[in-house]
Length: 195
Image (cartoon, rainbow, N blue to C red; front, side, top):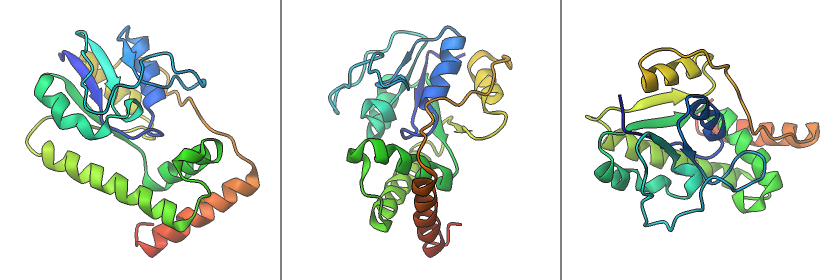
């Protein structure tokens, strides 16, 4: 099928859950975060250094700090399966807000400006991916689809493999914070006519 698997989605778009699927298929998966607070899979590469991938290995560029390097990876790995893993924008933004409440480098406190900035980054990235892969194979994988594991395993192995639809690395916040995040995100999405 494919030599390697290269994920183009942002952190908080199912990289750790996808890691679970690849590991269930006995395919090594490189990412900087294991969902348990440990950085055990791969050290972050310098922004301009492509990881030397062994055959039949997957990598999540978003968690490696290399999300903008997909075109450079394509030059080195043209026979890889490229996967744009994503989730609905509202759910993605709320997940980012929850993460920011634990890791302030993600933009704390959460304001409309922070949410707008994140939306702009996501849209720019998706536009670049759309343009680059206009005439190249790309698997678009909505990790909140009920069949995402079947879609992924069929693309990787040629057949559907029965792996539970697992979502790991979920952040818990207080009901007050959750409601605050939802209010800010809804307000921004309504202002941008994205709701």
